[in-house]
Amino acid sequence: MRLLVTGGAGFIGSNFVRHVCAERPDWEVVVFDLLTYAGDRRNLAGLEQVKLVQADICDEPAIDAAVASADAVVHFAAESHNDNSLHSPWPFVQTNVVGTYQLLESVRRHEKRLHHISTDEVYGDLELDDPAKFRPDTAYNPSSPYSSTKAASDLLVRAWMRSFGVQATISNCSNNYGPYQHVEKFIPRQITEILEGRRPKLYGSGENVRDWIHTEDHSSGVLAILERGRIGETYLIGADGERNNRAVVELILELMGRERNDFDHVNDRPGHDLRYAIDASKLREELGWRPRYNDFRAGLEATIAWYRANVAWWHPQKLETEAKYQVLGR
Ligand code: NAD
Ligand code: DAU
Image 1: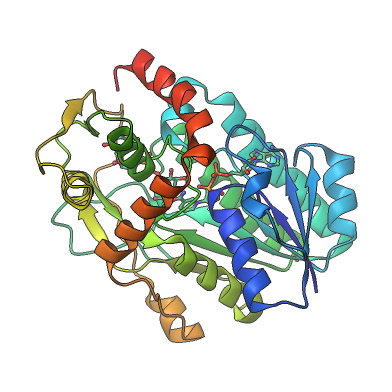
Image 2 (image 1 turned 90 degrees about the vertical axis):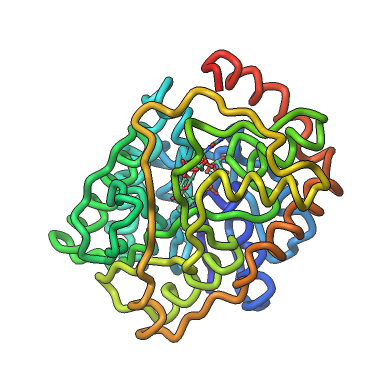
């Protein structure tokens, strides 16, 4: 198997590549990644099965050549951060929509199997007391430039499957946490703020709920779908990890030896989605997938330890990231 992984030098893509190298040592993996601010070749250090091609998925000849020489493609490459999409939406349209279009045209031309990585945010948000969770047939209702471009990419994949017979699957996953996540994101931002001697920053009231899953569990779900998923199907990946943001900040503070109320409330995100929640029963029942990281406290503790031990990895991103947040009052 020669597997092409777009966005494989980012947070989740590189975790997936490490997972594949451990689980399928005879596979060859080609990572196709532009190495934007969010990609880092160090995330792939020491992986002998992996070759990195630095290029843009919107670059038709480049993506076409990579697809032509692969047996299957897993598509992680995207602009992924909601806050960035609110003040600079164009790269989201370009990479998430145009880039996915270019990739689809290549897999169509070369008749290659595709797995498309998407997000639970395409379904919009839920009320705090809504008993329903997102399911594969939930109507799309995205809120932000980020989630609307991911929704658009999913719809392109669905259309290419139906109209052109492209052999694809889609997964929509909830919020990931774990090592190698960029410090612009919620959990690493709070950990590194504390490591830098500052206070965590909670948007608005902190009542917003996210459904946390360890990135290793996301990766095992993706591999299961790639190998055993039914072509044409959408699978939701989630580990029943709902928590509100305030509770997560309090737990991080406690685990790092600070008072649980030692945080600041900052400006809320415009259009801030209230709650996400995934019903992953299709993935569990059809493919027998189970998350292994069921203890959020232990997973968070290990993640904190990783950021403590890898200051050289995140420190260069930190200054630039906080300068951006300062302009937004967040
Ligand atoms: P990330 O921002 O950490 O990584 C994105 C990667 O894509 C980077 O390596 C970047 O260099 C690369 N990239 C960006 N534009 C590119 C382009 N034009 N051409 C080639 N490569 C490009 O993102 P992440 O958090 O690892 O998310 C990966 C995927 O998973 C995304 O599709 C995202 O929508 C989806 N997802 C993320 C989460 C989450 O919690 N982070 C949850 C569900 C789904
Ligand atoms: O649900 C899956 C999605 O999860 C993915 O599709 C996205 O790529 C990923 O970035 C993530 O989106 P969120 O917007 O939920 O993640 P973020 O880490 O930006 O924020 C998580 C929550 O924390 C959200 O309610 C906003 C809040 N927040 C965020 C930051 C950065 C804060 O309260 N303070 C902060 O400093």
